[in-house]
Length: 125
Figure 1: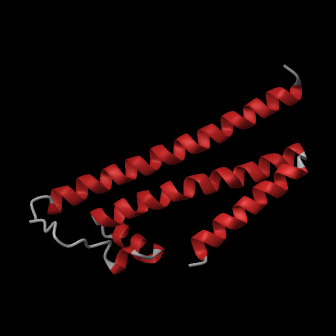
Figure 2: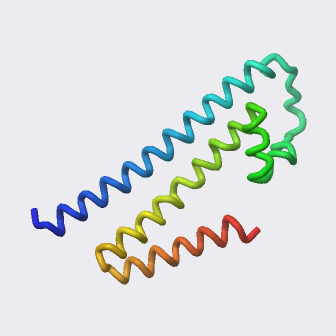
């Protein structure tokens, strides 16, 4: 294996670790949130006739962080979901950095375009 091949393999392993760590962290946070939520509200009656989404206070990052500070089960679950969404974004950021180090400008351009599209979809509405 040449030096370049071993660097690419190390880069691929690092990206795999980023994805694995992000998913495991998100799952752990959601699990803790579920335990908190069910311990406090698990016996509440459920109305399956009407769908109720997340309450308005959990529809913004600030609201989620406020919920986490008060140890709200829903807040913790929403935080875990934010980490889950952030995981592929982190992978693209690491890819851009890795391709810059490898001086692979075509993949830098492609990864940067993907990153801009992700940002536009997340923050654009």
